[in-house]
Every structure is written in structure tokens, then in C-alpha cells.
Length: 353
Image 1 (cartoon, rainbow, N blue to C red):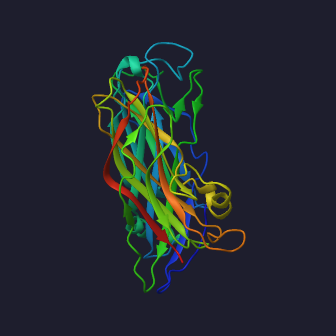
Image 2 (tube, rainbow, N blue to C red):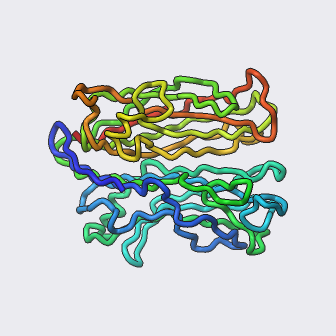
């Protein structure tokens, strides 16, 4: 969990931020029901982890996680009974205080994929949820509130034995997780207005389907200070229209020492929480019928120390967006690439000193 307090340079703006961090998932699979039920808690920020709230505070919530449909015929890689239908996946971010709750945001989708190309990944993000009014209505200043990401899967064709995985599924049927996070940032305003997020455009437009890591966005940040919280999110699309096959498009937002780096090294691991991993690495399958496919990620990290060398010199750090791709059930040819299109770009907001 991240927990920090900081002050803006013009007037006091107190920050308290929390995240579920690494290995956030609580369950490996959910049953696919015939009719929609209440859903299952996939991630939770409990009372002891939530930012401390007072009436009038601004509360920003974000979350992301990965779900995977199961195999279409019985084999060792199945997490449950096979199926050929596309289940409806309902997800919601819920703020709770005892038995009272308010749904802050909801998403409904089908993870469409041709039966021969299952198991299919779907990345589900929630960014920039403003929950301050809901927290006031639930009287969260009493300290009893918690956040939950709830998932349910259903189809009229389900028989009760099929499953939806929370994470990815290995060839041996094992569910692989650490693909999700739930984040909350409390802002207690004083006299200063919060600075708007800064936006950076696309740096690279082609990602070869060879699992090579490509930095597609990079934003330089000067003089990062201990106690600052960085909130970052991207909105882009990946296209396989120029390919003869589907492709898995993976992505991650990281804090790094250079604009070319795919991950943080010694300095970043020392000065930033979560080793500088603003999001986990995750991805989605992009098919010809879906292309261009959304690439939307969101996350946060805290600065545990000033961004300085061991000798005390300040150094810039970089928020980088990494993309990589691999061909699905095909052999890529020389020159093949997933095309990246900018939508909202990379945006970064700094909270704190």
C-alpha cells in the first residue's frame, strides 16, 4: 500500500494515496451464470488501506484488471468446462460503508473472439472516477468506507460449470495473475488549485509482433520530490489491419531513468514505490474484426525519495509507455507491425510538493 502526505508549492494541498499494489487479485475465476448475479469481489481497498477522508475532500479512484475467456474444447489448458459462447462481463467500482454502497462506475462488454482463437484476454480500465460526493453521502469521514471492484459473467447458454479467469491462463490451465490494481488518491484542497495533467503525444507508431519492447510514449519529469504522487494514464489504439492474423498487444506504464528504457533500474527502484511500475504489464488480443483495438492503462506511484543521484545531484526521470506484441497462431513476416494510433496520448499529473 502507498500512503503519503505532501504539500503543494502555492498554498496547502494535502495528498493521501493508496493502492492495492502487486498481486491485487482476490480470486482466480468467477463462474459464468445463466442470469446476472451480484458479482464477486476481485479487488478491495479495505478500511485500513483507504485514504483518510474528511467532508469536502476530493477522492479520485482508478482501477484496471484483466479477464480471460476459457477454452472451447476440453484440454489441459482449461480453467473450467469449455464453451463456445461469448459471456457478458459486467464490472463495477463500488464505494461501501457497512451495508450502504454507491456504484461509482460500471462497464459491460463481451470479449469477442473466434472459437479457434480462444483463450481471449480483455483488459478493463477505470480512470479518473471522482468519488468525493459519494464519499460525503456515505459519511466516509467516519472511517468505515472501503472500495471494491466487482465482477460478474453471464450467458443464457451457461450451464454452471464454465469459468471466466481473472488474469491470464497458462497452457497447463494455471491462472496467472498480478495483472490488476485498484488506486485511490485523496486531495484535501487549500488555497492552491491542482495543476492540470500534462499531455505527451505518440513517440513510436510501429510495434513488431516479436515481443520486442517499444517505448511508444515518454514524458520527462524534472525535480521529482519525496512525497509526490504521480498519476498516469494513456489512451491509444493498436491496429492489426495490415496483418493477416490477430495479435496480442501488451503494454505497461513505468517510471524510468531514460526515455528509451523499458523499466526502472537502480535509481528508480530506490526512489519510487513499486519499483517504478505505475501499472502492471497486461494486454489484450486484437482481432481483424475488432481492429483498431483500445490501449487504455491507468496507475500511480509515490516518490519515496527525491530523484537524485547518490552524490545528491537532481536528475530527471521519465514516465514511459511500453508496448509489445506477438502474433496469434501465425508466423510473422519481416516488416510486420502493429500500428499504434494516438487517441488521448499519455497524461501525467503530479500531486504534492
